[in-house]
Image (cartoon, rainbow, N blue to C red; front, side):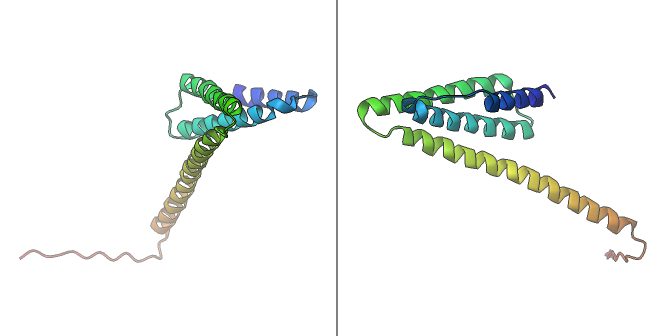
Length: 137
């Protein structure tokens, strides 16, 4: 519950405060946001798999953001588009994590439907069950 309150307060502050990001930093902010989203999707997936660890999440969030910003910085200095490597890696991992989260919820939904159908079948007195028993000689 505390997490949801913190997210709500953070979102309200983000909309209430007049933010200004200098033009030369916008590409850095964009790549850092992409790295943060990758970490958040990974945390959601690990939470659903019951493997979430707060320390791993925080260090991954900070580490991914730092690496992405560093690639952006070095690419700017060399005149190369090194940030594309970060976009490719983080984008691919985001889609993989999203696919895992989607499969988790689809499997959960399908399991509920199967259990419901099975329960209805067992409780329906009009259904006829046929069993074949083999006789041994």
